Amino acid sequence: MEAMATAGQREAASGPGPVVADVLRTLSLVRPAADRQRMIDQMRELEDVKSAAAAKQARIAVAYDLATRQEQAAAGVPADELGAGVGAEIALARRESPSRGARLLGLGKALVEMPHTFAALESGQLNEWRATLAVKETACLSVEDRTAVDEEIAADTGTLAGCGDRAVIAAVRAAAYRRDPHSVARRASHAVNERTVTLRPAPDTMTRLTALLPVAQGVAVYAELTRHADALKSSGDERPKGNIMADGLVERVTRTPGGYTGIDLQLVMTDRTLFQGDSEPARLAGYGIVPGEWARKAIRGELLADAEPTGGEATAQAAGLGSNGGVNGGTGDVGIGRSGRLPSVGTPEGRELNVWLRRLYTAPTSGELVRMDSRARLFPAGLRRFVQVRDDTCRTPYCDAPIRHLDHIISWHHDGPTTSTNGQGLCETCNHTKETPGWAAKTITRQGQRHSVETRTPTGHTYPSTAPPLPGTAFPGVVAVPAKKSSRRRRRLRRRMKALKRAHKIRSWA
Image 1 (cartoon, rainbow, N blue to C red):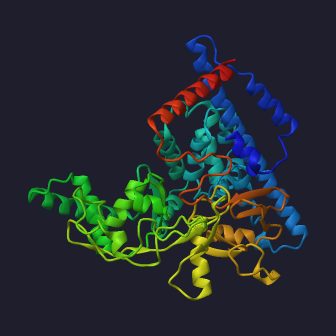
Image 2: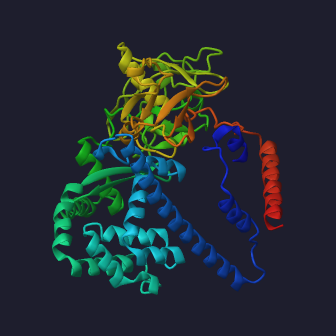
Image 3: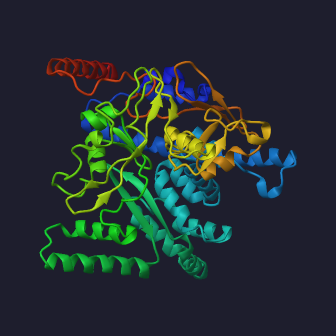
């Protein structure tokens, strides 16, 4: 990690101020106590320090927002645009996503109106998350009512000591309802407008598909899936009930057995992983890194069945690809074959999966994506696909949102060219933030490095962003270890890692 930092990955190069440096120096002197009781006391004290630091960050965020608004107003910025981009700046400074930064700014503003809750956060009686819960449950109230609820709860007197998340929510919600029942009722009636569906990665090549629905619809969907699962179980289906419900949900939504036939999955892997059984992981757009074996099963249609595929054995030969997948020597090709349609691959259930392969070319040293095959001949469409494959997710640091906009790094109205070098994938929020006065971006060109962009905020802080490595390449400063090593080499590496860990422990406890 230190090697990566020294390779230019540190943002905002200016070091901490003298006060913060003193705090960090004091913390560096803390060592685990000699007895177990004191160790627990130390952990509690450090938790109080974390809460106090969160309170200071909230106060600074509010002060920064106020100073920015005053400066923008003096510069003639329209009233409805004051404060634009502040949440994104806070997010970058706190190494958070832009949406999280906006919520943290909102938390700071609300805590100013709740002095007792703020005092409880400063003293460590509430952590940042439980203070956020208190703010969230009073969001529908006026400033006067929110202050009254804060006084009623008086969290700084210890009334919420020992309360878990649910207890805090219940206490604040009850006080809010007593203060203004009509606002709480209106909030519940308007909540239907917040219904949505989200997708988040989960461990082991799984995802969490979440739907926020009105209670009647949610209960109806669950009841139907339950009825469907009970009917199949009674007819002899041996799958667990939860599996049947999950499969039924996918098949009802996609109207396709298995759920992904005909959808462009954008699965990127090396030719070695596809054709030679290499263990180099692949990358699935919208999810992230997946094991090579899982990727091979995905294109053969084996994910939902334990049986071997019936038609996937001679895939490469049938497509005329050969064992190398059409690699040109010296090009650094990490693609997965020749652009074109493979014969449909049969599955145990008799379904047909249409598999297309597209060849990607990368620079041998840096892994920079330099070219790709495309069936499309229109330049904008091919360029869009190129940038989406290269960037994978929004290029703003700490933002993992899907790409929604293809952005000109140097804007088009400033004569920025429409090229892959001047293009980056951004989410909608980050693209709008970039247009706020004071924000700027430029491409950083370094020999042997993947596509890099430097974003500059209105305060002059800069944050670098480098395109993620494609399968078969490594992060800067990280030595890529070949997937397969001899048993003697693996034993040597394990001994070396154990020695490094022991040395690290000795330094940490010294």
